[in-house]
Length: 272
Length: 169
Image (cartoon, rainbow over all chains, first blue to last red; front, side, top):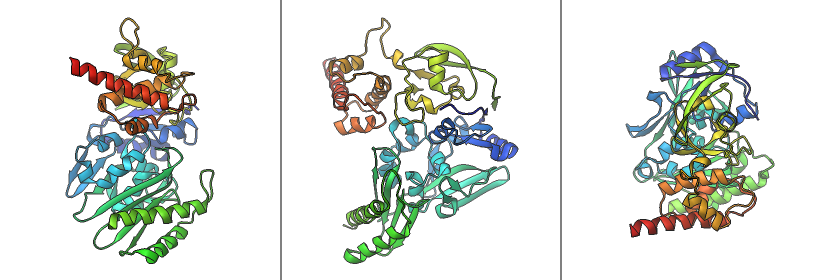
């Protein structure tokens, strides 16, 4: 359980980070909080030749609101966002999701953008971005591009990021008037990766239901307001479309059951 | 920008429990191993080495973190507290440690240093915690002896003692 050898480069700015990535390409790996990456290094599932530590890059550590968006920079820790005094008003879904996201001790060092870049199919933050319609900003030395969740997440630990790009920002839309938000999760232990997690937004126009832990990436279903048997039928179709599989934690049928039951409970609570 | 080559040992200087300390390590050395092997802080216990069990939890610049998920070179110039830093100058136990003893909140003691550090940060942030909040904080630690009940009781007792002491002062 010791990492293979690597060169360590600590950068002081985003400019320096993308310059190092341009130099080393896919042999380099960004180290922000390391709460997902370091276990993979310790188990030697990842063996990059160069680690680029951005945790002290002054222009990457903040989060801020601008233009109805919460902008979280690459090195902002999950705890720093969780502790924003007005987070419950700014992005209520994040406020609800954070307690499920690892533990206090990992949120203190782990970053929001790191979890997004890692793209674990059971992770809560990719789910939140997908359900809220947020965006991911990728930056390389030649410029920036902004992707939606469905463009960015491509499979387990697989994203649209190119080797010379870093996830510079994750952008969450601020709470919209009249919209309500819900989050729930089943895990082996509080704070572990989700067996199934669901995030829901309900507005006057539609219901958006997101699920992680079942498909190979966070998946979103949009539908008009439904109730009773119609809602059950919609949830059942969605549960089957996710392509659930058995693993050591839960069977496929249990995962579909959770999507149907918890989905209905969450949606009905928010419709009340 | 700071570049440290693999294979070579690099100087790491940090504040450990209030004292300036210097050690040398390769970039790949975890903070947990650095604290134990280079600086002799063997109160840092190494369990799962992938961030699940919480035994290696220390405080870095005041916030509790997994030292097995942090590289020593990344903490250069920072301040680290281990369980050795909880006791007073004469080695007397802190109120938290006394409460753990009184409430039988440890048996084998392997998980205890990490839990003590998490509890110390937690009580600074949440001086009047509910049992549920204590249990949520504890979810980041595995204890195979106690069943957690006695740990929760010890932490809640310290919170109450500190409040009473403050009220009397």
